Length: 161
Image 1 (cartoon, rainbow, N blue to C red):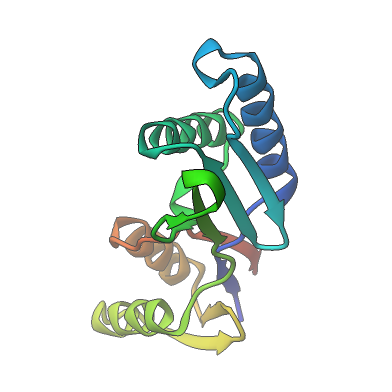
Image 2: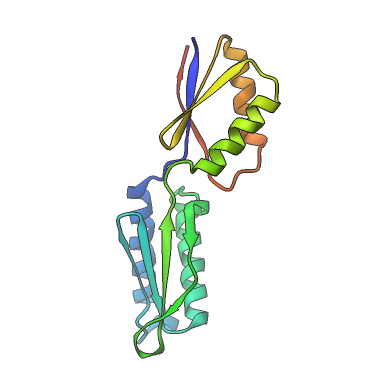
């Protein structure tokens, strides 16, 4: 039976390249001279440090711009509220979302079942496997999922006939 997987994965190496570019620009720009602005990644977490709110917003803008240049969807970044750090600076945690969470997977399953397509959806950890008898049904399912408003970027992989 034909099948495909629906996943939400982030290319960490491209994200690292974007973070390195942000770091280089922070070191070179005049408005960042003499500040403690930085961005660091550890696992699936980013830590943005800035001296004030305006510089924090500029760091966000740089991060979004360089992610777009490197082909990383910035919707995977979950910004937490900024916290006060040492010497009046701000620290903000950012979580890199990997995989499809349970609420989003239930929303996708509900939409697929509501579309009356003859496909089955199975949850496999943080991804979904969709199987059907006809290839056309699977292609219609992909088209319906692309039209669906989901806050995560979805990829469709392992299409097998």
